Image 1: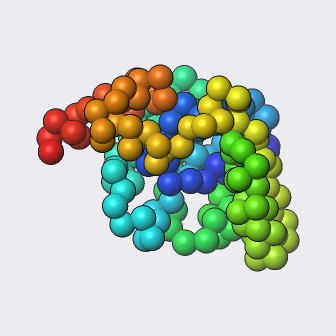
Image 2: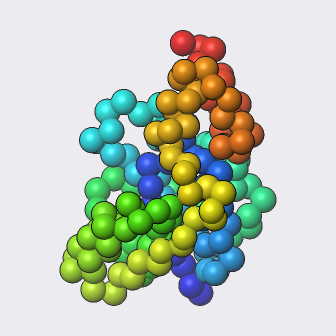
Length: 161
């Protein structure tokens, strides 16, 4: 059985993330969307548990996708999951240098690790979680950028504030 891990902070989970998830799930028997608890991102819009909830709802119709969380090195999570492949989405050439260095570091840490880059559909090439948050915080519409369940959670969180 082939298994891959799609790691990220997913704060929030966008339609670009969903596109990469669907395409990765079509390649592998099992895809684990792994939500990173990132200590460097002190100002997350959503807690890790909220992100897991939104992703689980967004991918509910994809039978071979599971959502999990991890803290620490992605290669340690790969080993824990019994997976050798990490999926990374590529939006633009600006992503390449960072992602290439990360893939090489992971290969040094875990020689069996491979990174599969999935080039984002052109209609999502400009889309980032940061951009979605900024547009939303300034009162703009983000419904075309995120799955409906994510939009619902964003509105609910804003209304509670």
